[in-house]
Length: 263
Image (tube, rainbow, N blue to C red; front, side):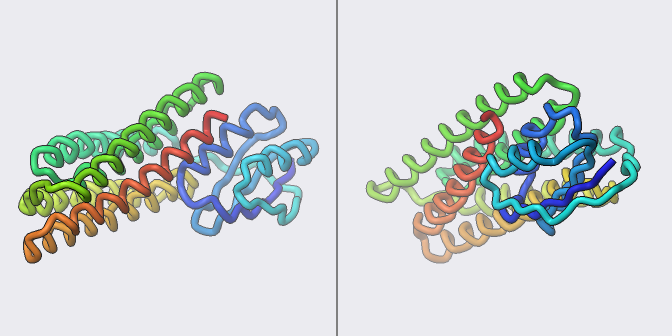
């Protein structure tokens, strides 16, 4: 068996990891993929040549470069059952707060909460795809990815349209109390998710990537809390619309990445 290392500069979240897995899983010579998301590296354990594998990775346009190939022993696999349980919990927390923030966002007229709820939904989709993909046919995975990507893109587009409508028309100032309280609860949910992921002490890429994803969510939660405070002090809708527009941009970017999985 050989191990070939790739540097992939644009691999920074679970979406890119799933893109690569789905691209390479049809190759019989690929035996194991070891992702290092923080350092943007991928180790491919394989037999026979690497040319077809390299061509497939290059087709994703993620800024790949081959660093070298060496002989290697097959890696020791970690216990997957514990990881799956943790990912199911994280998926449940994210989807639960998607429902909560979407509902309270519309009740309180806060686009920041609505946008944050879609960010939670984007995470849920990535986690669900990771769990759903185990043992599934590649054609089914691509169909799920395509539906999820278009659905998320449609919601983000509607969100942008609503932000623009509120920018150019007179609309009520959002209820800052809801923004702050619900965002604090979502922040706690993400902190619990991060604790569960770190508790696994897994070195596998999808767990490390999940930790990065959840850390980014904590930053978004903080942004919505700050926007709520500014709404209170300024008595203005603008901070909420600004944070909503920024987060909708992240959601749209995530949707585009998920759609790449279906190609």
